[in-house]
Image (cartoon, rainbow, N blue to C red; front, side, top):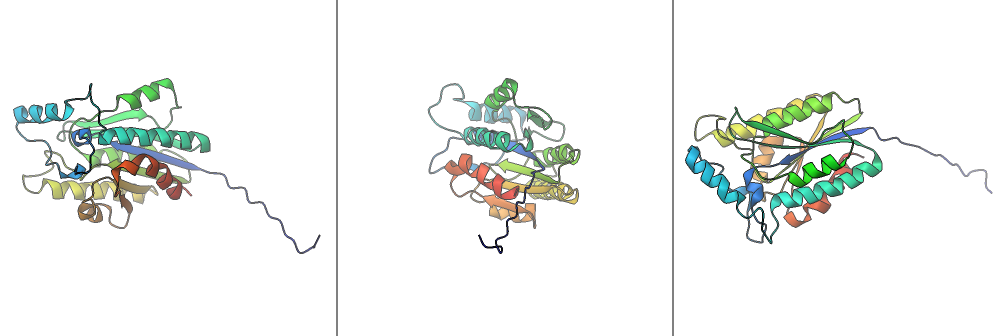
Length: 242
């Protein structure tokens, strides 16, 4: 054989930690069809009585249904992600978020970042269900603290939502949506400053309208076809974690 042949083996070890944040807002209970518009909801009403009626209307049919909801596709995507993450050995945590006002911020541990995969984790995934509004800022900040404590070289914060950030009590009426977008932007920026790579994925086709302001120069994607969400999640993660 020719002496000019040169062989080189470059063994690369992965050192990745990732947190997935799942939107558990009430709008994820909406049935998926060709005419649906996941991000078009107006959010929960202020009046407590109207709010309970609004919430009940979105929870109807949870026991008996012959259709898929947005949150069902989120859960299918998580199941595929877990298979991939377990095979490559990355450190990962999965959390859900919702809220109704600053005094009721909801952050659910589906799989803690230092927790192994178990039957308990699988049961928590199965129990993930739509709750209240889309209060992103506190969830992002808490996820950032989880990732910041990890020693991995690559840290990724992966946010999955069905619409814009919005919640009651952010600010005076009329500017709440704008305030929510800027608060979320600051939370993402705080993560970036701690060497964490934020990435936002939404199934809201009008997402470009607010994601440009929310993410700035950080990466995001608006999914054109919501039905591709389960398959798209592992592909996106592979691209981000290379």
